[in-house]
Length: 89
Image (cartoon, rainbow, N blue to C red; front, side, top):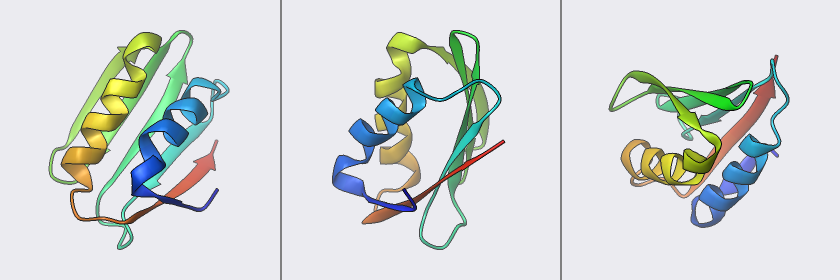
């Protein structure tokens, strides 16, 4: 899943994050690659690392993943049409 449209990004990313195996990192980048966020699973919590307009690291519970993804997309990628998604260990 290298490129996804921004209009459906929150739903697609939320489902991928909830299925994320422990130890893997999901990275979402802008087209230029200058703004991104990463998600890592730690048991029942998810650690978000945000880099771009805001630089922050925070943990959220399973129930808050969809709202968090939607908020980050609105802040970090306001004018983007597509996002690059990659999975690494």
